[in-house]
Image 1 (cartoon, rainbow, N blue to C red):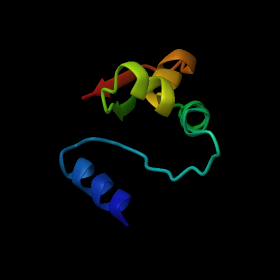
Image 2: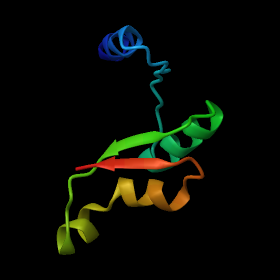
Image 3: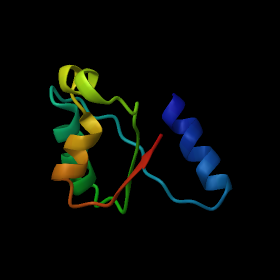
Length: 77
């Protein structure tokens, strides 16, 4: 599984991470709930950087997480 490889690579560098697969109809809500449940220190997300009408039509999961999370969020672009 890809997440196992990521966890092993992080452990080899002295980082402690916990991976989890969460199924939810609402991606941002599922992510925020999982971060709270597992007492995450940080949420790291990648943004497509959509602007204008594309963002309105396609929505922004990153924006929803930023708005609703009590856990710090690092957004990479």
